[in-house]
Length: 453
Image 1 (tube, rainbow, N blue to C red):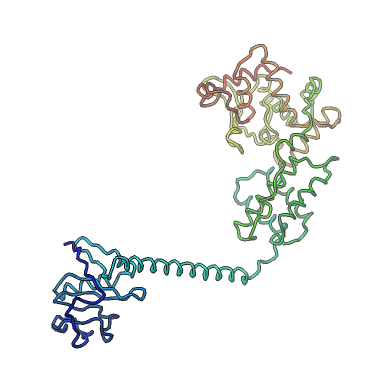
Image 2: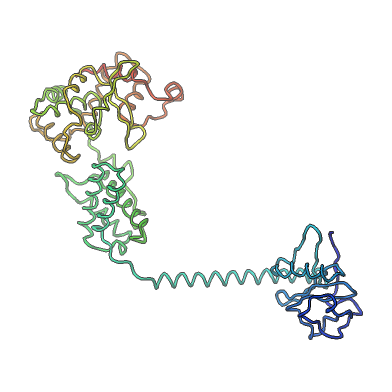
């Protein structure tokens, strides 16, 4: 049943008197005095039994925040009173302010509603003060622990290099060219910071390293802002790894800003293509190793990157069963756009058939790149300049655009981007509706087949 009865007054109703204290050790009804109890007398103990009777009705009595409160149990039966008392004993002080069950509701007894409000406010204030004090104690403890903990052992970049590259190789998802890039950045860091402890470096130290990179001379010229950005990006990546392994406590490189796109583009040299005569010299270049001939032909007729050509295997050269078109399959790449299928030009196919894949088997990527550049310059009579192997890729794109002028297609730029493994821009909705799954081999074959050097 639900009880809404609230008894007023800080003392029991008039006429209640105490003749002798209750026997706390007894639990049977006969041990409770039949006489009424005057709970205002100090000899009455509310700490343990917390139960008394007035006019045959049992009450629960308890001190909460220095305030003595009483709750009517609304029963004359001792066993039922003891049951309800057990429930109240389990509750925290603040939970007694709003006690309600399916069967009954108990109300606190106060002299006035104002007294109840004051008690609640005081209780809340005390709880807040306790929480604030607890927070201060915890904070002081944490600060003490931080200042008194054992200092980390010295950890220079040379040691981080060893651990980082070992982990990258163990993970097995990094290319040899990336390992070479990581090593290059680590060597720059080691040359500049020597054996200094990374934990002792500041943001200003990394800023100074950035400035130092801009003064370095590499192959006769200063490092470009684009190259400096690459070193900074790798440095942030290395330190993030070190934090994750608890080698260091902070990434001081993270706040250092990279050069923006406008700054990097301002330093980029004007793109210069190989001339028609130079292309002919490259394609005619003969060497005792057929791999070089195949290498330069694939670059000029597919636009593939040097690293992608190095990784071609025999099973990557496939004939499409439906169209009969031969293509080179690139199943994996750093980016989603890099994984693609490139149709093989009719002039390239017989040259590919002469080769054994992978090309330059036994050479790592670094040695392969050096040889590819060396023989490219040799094919041009030994001249070196701003043109390099990547320029062949630019010539391929130019050749597609130039040789398809007579048959303009609104999708030609997008098809070229897909062939080269570039992310396609959102030209218009029609493009993505029509070619949602990418352009077909026939679309790409038609463009590539028009190339003529």
